[in-house]
Length: 296
Length: 66
Image 1 (tube, rainbow over the protein chains, first blue to last red):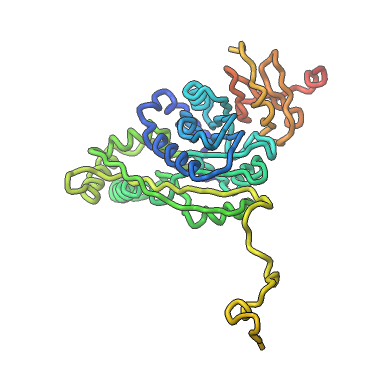
Image 2: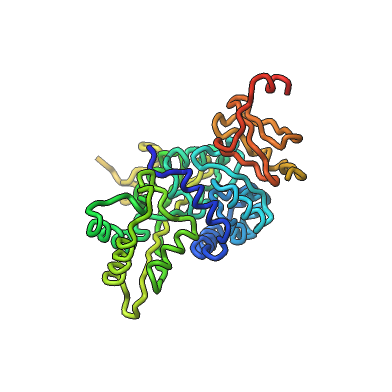
């Protein structure tokens, strides 16, 4: 199924790579949070892939205890891959999450910072990631979730219905956290965990938010999006609605980013797992009543 | 620019994105060649571009010589 126009996703990132340093705050923040999660894991990861790397911020936040010897940045946009390599000095390639060019069982860690929400076939991408990892390899990702930009979407939707008498897909449909855990299991991962955090960014002006989204390369890449720009009057009305409905006491405008974190492991015999039903060696009666319990 | 090649570490983990089969490194042309897919992926500034729409289609006559 094609939800996103991947050529548009790539084009937006190619364009964003030119001045990404001015707009990378959300990626830097999430890279740091992903790094914090790695800090909680005692395993080491000699070979790691940074999938959907953007400017390579992840390289700065992988903790020393993870003992990554080889980090490879990968992005759909060759310009972003080049930027990541220049920033971190690590290896880089251009590659598509939907057609992962990685040998089976060659990686210890795949980390993905705010990129997988633009993938059409998320189960397919997860399966390819699982195959690229060695047994007991870790997949750790942050992606934008369904509450992201709820204020902007509300304002644009309301304005468009009012002014243009119809609706076109405008912001991206995001994954729900409850789906994400299931997808990980279906892709063959063990011990899947999905959880969310909300980051609220405060703006003085909705147009600045839209400019930021463009700078981040996160503007609409919906396959069914309108080819033309919105009418100016519709955009202006959306800004009014944003102010009317969402402005806080100090007149600032909140923009919600919901971050869905995924953690999952490639199955390995060392991992904890439930016992087979019927494999118990001690009866519950003995446990609760002592050795001489008779259970009838 | 083709002054520097691809890092061997990268060559170790890369496969063809379509077939997941092996790639041949053509150092002179700075390309990674997937014979199964009939595609040559360019390497720019040491960065392999593993995108199908950036790849060159191999013509059969040339493939046999290599």
